[in-house]
Length: 168
Length: 144
Image 1 (cartoon, rainbow over the protein chains, first blue to last red):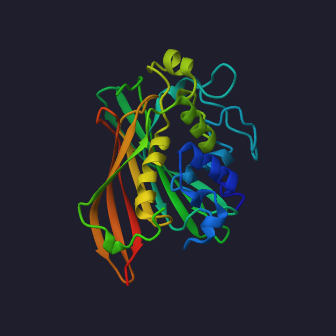
Image 2: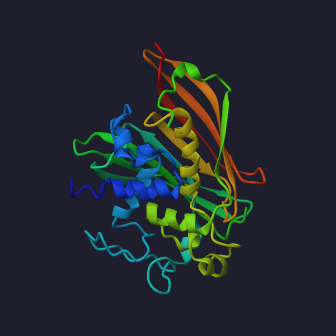
Image 3: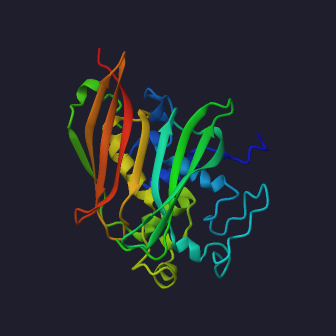
């Protein structure tokens, strides 16, 4: 598992609480264990888009702010022109937008799960945008597997690289 | 939160809508950055967003809008029933925006003991412009 070029993702109640709070969730299934036990799910689960927060555990994630942990392996240097005063972040960050996101669910994410996340590149294409010049699209596909190797979630993300600020 | 919704409760072309945020605050965007781990400064650093990137202000993570749209689905269909959820981010969401998510039942496929539901999704801002479009599928129990 360690040489699959992926990373671990530990699902825990605090992470779920912070994520659900940011969505202004009012559903107690995301934090109230006593309530959650009375439901068919039998316990707290994570909201449907929570898998995206595995970024916290991804040592190669480029948008982590000043976080230096986890640092299970050295991070590749930021691409030229992507450096910014004070460290991470940078000019190219302004040009990369999130175009599409898709999740396929096999089981809900639950506190206590230790998932292994592996990501592979998908399709790439480009088109002429009306507002952002040439748009370059690239897909990445992440599989989240449990400790038995069973697929829990597949997340497909499409990034868009724009030539200039896209005002819509 | 409606854990008791059954497949039979839904009708083809039935719609459901929900206001998922009223006058989005920068604070909520920052909370989402911390919750998700996405600290792209374009979402929280006004100087970076305007001077370096050329946008009128910071704007929300697409995933924040997707997460808010997900609330429509789970509040309507119930918890742990989604099989897929996908969106396109078609327009940015700015501080001060109010968003309404709308779902429409586009497919009902009864099976043994459960049924598959497909929902078409549009989330729009206060001007009625779509910010997110997409679809979701869920499996609901049959009644009886």
